[in-house]
Amino acid sequence: MDPQQRPKAAAPSQNYARRSMTWGLVNSLASAATIAVALPLIVSQVGLDAYGRWALLALFVGVAGASDLGIARSLVANITVSSGLDVGRVIAAGLVTAAGIALAVSVAIAMAQLANSALWGRTSFVSQTDGVFVLVAGIVVILMHMLNQAMRGALEGLYCVHLVSKGFALQTFLYYMTGLAAAALSGDWHIMVLTSVVTYAIVGALHWYQLRALFRVSLVWPDRVAIHGVLREGLASYLALLPSSMLLPMLGFLFVRESSSATEFGTYDLAIKVTILVTTGIATVGLPVMALAASRRSAPEALRSMGLRLTGLGVIAFVLSIAGLWLVGPTLMQAVLPNAHADVVTGALMALSGAGVLAAAEPLNRVLLGLGLVRAVFCTRFGMLCATLVALSLIDRPPLERFTLSYAVGCSVCGFLVLFAFYRATSNSTVQSARLATQNPERKVSDSLK
Image (tube, rainbow, N blue to C red; front, side):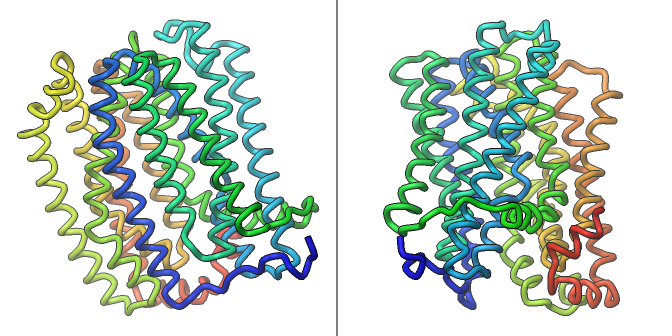
């Protein structure tokens, strides 16, 4: 392709930040709705044991999300400010970096499992044959997930069409709907795993078609400078959220090592997913308002007042959610899981007791990110990880109660740390310095985290 005909990055409009925030919320709510509809149907089709084995694949999705080094965000930033001649090289740098990270993570996981069965443990319900099968499928999912994220970031950077949020919602929808179709048609969890892997490949093919066929992007093999730029730009925000993004996959693998059956792991996975569904609804109470206020650099007093009021609304939603799950949850779950509904609801209530606190404070976390105080966000998330691990070592209960209570403790600590950080961040001096820092937030915060 003639270099002069290569697409140039579209300039973000004045409403781009607002629309990006809106599509982020649409993605969260649409994904939550998809999971809420599909999961009960899948469990009713194949049972909790087969569901628990299929859910093992989702652990690798979490590993991919915790290992991507912020490539999608970096591509959006790099492509938006690049000239038309550099776009192909920047996109290629993102794809090569994503593939390299996926390869490194996959090799590390495979070596750990081959060396001493560290992945599944020696006494868990995962047999050697099933463990290898899920491991291979999970490695493919890690690769496809990272490549898909990179391509979505490239598309959003080129055309400002919010492909990161839209593409992820589409991926979630296809993942669970094809899983449901496989469960209804075959009832075999092996077929469900293969179907999920194929789904990731289909999503990747769709994104690739958009890049090459529709938008005529011509890739150029990246040099070291391009790869370094992709790694640098997204690293700060990635490091800030790393402790929390790695927490659930880590807990999932630890639970598999200690659980005695796939049914037990399926119960835990359902309890965590119910918790995430509820907390997604709680967090959306204040996210749009606080994200917009932070982007407009509102006065400190206004930020503090608005934040505390919206946190209060989040707490009210949290209390109502706990009450609703306690009153209605057993009846709803009994229709799907006649024999294990009580365990799922109990686990969800335990996890939600702390996760709801964090969800109520999440709008304040967005303010910290909007002000460029990424180090403060990292400290709150790191406190969450440490508190969860300490609770996990101290609580002496059956695995389901132990892991959900530990997660609740970590979320509660993180929520209160966010409140403290927000209170300090909305002081006049902190806000003024943060405003100056956000002229180049990614680079500044990257230096501060060294």
